[in-house]
Length: 238
Length: 377
Ligand SMILES: Nc1ncnc2c1ncn2[C@@H]1O[C@H](COP(=O)(O)OP(=O)(O)OP(=O)(O)O)[C@@H](O)[C@H]1O
Ligand SMILES: [Mg+2]
Image 1: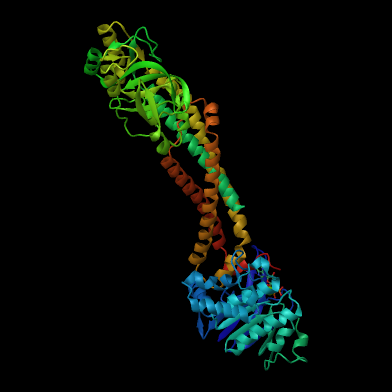
Image 2 (image 1 turned 90 degrees about the vertical axis):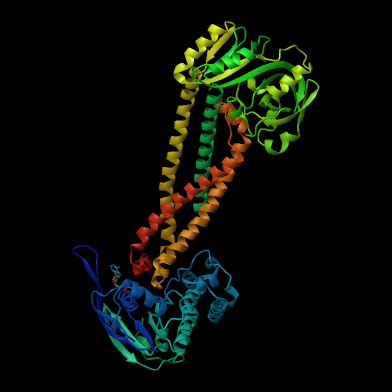
């Protein structure tokens, strides 16, 4: 469980301070699908970075199961073992195949076993890239690369998966695909936190938050339902 | 791009090192040759080409000179005859000179191989057919034989070009010569103890004293002082050497700068990818390892390409190099080349590692979130 009550400002120079997150008070319970919506520049990415222990809040605290994670080293360890990250841009290694990209984080830490290679394959198959396993990033479309990034994020088996705009600049079909993968992860008992302005995302959510000019408000707690075509919470999302 | 850059560096670096080494060696050998502090010949002979019939009495002269204070080495040479023959595919008139391998300090520095010459074997100059074997003596010369005075000699070794009469000469051991004199197989009559010239290495401040002592005792001799020539050669070569050193320095510095720019370009391109690994919580050391590993692979390949290109070019144009430098260039041996290649590679890779290390350091000073975020909108 992640509990946060934070404010985050960025100092540009001596006289200018940008407040990215004015006030955010939220709880991410275990095994939930949290969606944070809001217009561009409202502070969603910043909040996600603070929740994901990438950025330290200017004020307030982020508590992980009731504890504050003090040092950067510990935060890195939590990010490695407990958190997973999926970004708008997957940032793949340019000269490694899809499979190798998925395995790379693991390979950097230890010797990869054959079971792990198989798991990497399975993950890529699961995101619909069975045919692309040996392809290099430049041989894949943006949506395919994004799914490789997703598989890479899942490879380390994170308990909490953070996804920042995972569907930005994707067509509705691909967006739905990404969200259903995230949803699958949630159904497996993991926690998913997504920042998006894609209205489709709200259908999958259990917890919906909205961000406006740095202020986070809780919209609803609902039942995750991907087939909810007339999702009333979705309308207000961006 | 990176690979090409490294290849170029390695190319220039290797060429310079190669060249420098050649020059260095040439200086050494030239100094060795004219390194004789005294050259003693018959006064009716040309010091540089004592290939006439006037000889000195070796029996008396050698022990006398050896006995003089300050004398370090005395190397005798005996001109036998000039023969018209075909040696190693080259036809011509070749002076045949005998020398004492155990005492020699002038010729040996020019020899391509270092093993000592035995009786019954000869060393040939480049213009006596040696040029054909210059760069693959190891495997071919041994099988070559030359007939001199009705006797077969094995061509054992080749002399690097010197630009002097030495190049046309065929050298055998004094032992072989004495045996032939004894058996009267030569076409001329030579006394058994005859000597055409002696090369003397001596303490610098005693040279003139020694020379005077020799001429006083043997009025028929002519003493030539070599140290002047030595200095001259050195003064001629030193500036050239300095130029090459400066060139190497320049190459290293420019390359350092170039590689830093290259790496910062490459790493900026991959900054977000690296940032991603950091976001994922992978320890800094591990991702640095990944990048450095890649740098090593790329620059390793690059420098090998560069070295090979340089080697190919230099190897093919050795004669051009000779012509251009007008120096008795002594080219490095295989093992030296290997060594130089290794050094060049090490230097190139060190430069690359330094360059990339510098860029990585500045990159890792940033926070991971900043790294993935920058430039995103
Ligand atoms: N490192 C930074 N330095 C200065 N200002 C920053 C920094 N990071 C974020 N900001 C500012 O904070 C505000 C919120 O940015 P953030 O990226 O969190 O918004 P967002 O909701 O994710 O927007 P989008 O939907 O476009 O991704 C923006 O005004 C941005 O300019
Ligand atoms: Mg954002």
